[in-house]
Image (cartoon, rainbow, N blue to C red; front, side, top):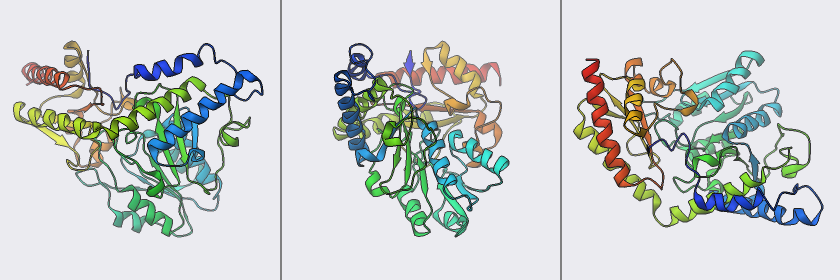
Length: 382
């Protein structure tokens, strides 16, 4: 199988699995225990937190281990809204992930919040001027904007938006799930108060993530119970997962330092150029210059994504039609329609996403299979 769906999830790095294995066997004690058995486990958690902080350029104590990006984003929204009950207005992007859209919709429908959803241009980018115009001083409780889009890979102007929010003393949340490990990040210089990450997007296991809470930011926990995570997230720690995300963070940092970002971008760009050259009626979605290096959103006139996915799967190629969390939906992608594509164009789009493990040989084979699949579909359904 040629796997080109790394934005959905990445395979577990063998070195990450090796790091995790002892914490399923010998190191089994509860880290909250005061016994001798718990000491190496506590040290391992502390080391993993330091590795994640090094990848994200922040302080270790600013990171909370969670179950993933969805929990992190829901926790951030909870913290922002519960501490400001008098403020009933939120600003979000129109192309956010459902982990933001769904809880915000609940706040809107069940709790009477007013929500401004920033429009985007044909490249998938919102404008700072629109953000500035949307702010309601004394009413806006928070701003939530995605760092890198999960479908198109488009990178937004997060530090600039966070600075605008800070000028109005509005907490700023960013979904950075698709940015971590793909581009260098500096939370220290970004100016955001909350940032969400998910380990399985950069070769760590599923079920482990991070919530960054900027130092000195007031925080109200969502999960209550024990005193874990400095009383910020109750529940016995997923020790093996924490060790795994720490190991994956170290590997991602080393990979970025040794040139993985330009290498992945080069082979992604080659793939896109060959698709556009070899397959008539093919088009690229999203800003070509401001994207994470691993993502290509491509549409094919006269096709439907569901049929292409089946034909590619038969040829041993795994891709997706967009967000993995929206697989099976009868509706066209809200990201693509927000960018101005009609329903037919949105439904003819495939997302190809690479990782540092992807090879040129895999892309060459995937390109051949894609060309055959598009030709086959058009011949069957002209």
